[in-house]
Image (cartoon, rainbow, N blue to C red):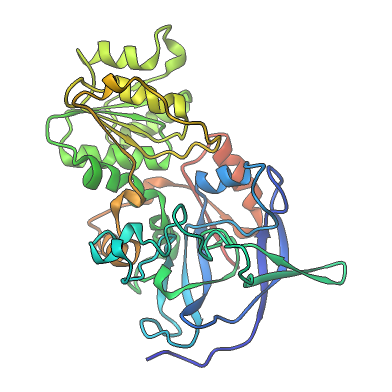
Length: 382
């Protein structure tokens, strides 16, 4: 059943990025009706991710644009040919869809779908050249298109491909479910799916934001004997212990580089190191902090500078480096199962939500995240 007939354009509020490093502006925009194989979603709750801020800081990025990729809401209308969703379904937009037809999907690597993975092929999520935007705003009497970004959840309504939409449990609170759009599965999956942390192992996590703490929490659940948290903000240390971090290090307190500190602290290096900041220098430090011959480095952070990661190949003898996409979770196939665990109270996310604000205060939320004063700040619509 495809649901109710498609309606026309709709006006709503959205937080529009007009240029790099500028405050977002709440604008009244127009959102087109969904086209074939698309759904239009009314966003109920959205959370902020550092990836949004990283993109906002990129001088080479094109604007205006609607950012956001951690949101949850309700299907408002569906386009022609949509069979998996109907009006009223509770859904989570996912930034990597699953076409089911490409070579990666056919090889069970749906989280790297060639049609939707933004680093491989242009899609509506990063707005390809020549594709008509579904968003527009009236400025000085002229209609100006607004570009998309991933699932563009910094808007009361967004249009996404049905392949990029996951149906979730009706009892899942939107303000908690939205965290599963990126941050939590990325951290959980980095430890469980990518590193496959073993019982009794020693783990280091560089960067104690939401993703880093999710990786630490998952390592604790997997049975790691030590989880060492590294951050330059000591305000995060007390909270980190609630997520399984057993000891914390502030690199500013040491004259030696952090890799040397970790090697000395662990008699030769950690078994797993997760880089969750997005800094090439820290990625190299993570590699050099792992145990020679067996250490695993998991790069989760995104460095907006575009600098290459360079190191002596001999550093790799027996070691490995991995960089998972969304913790190797398949957005449409796997994330609903994680949210089911939330509904069954087998998984708790309350500690990750440190602030809740109305959508109109999105710039305040951005400031909190930039300053390291929150984990996830959830914004509620209307």
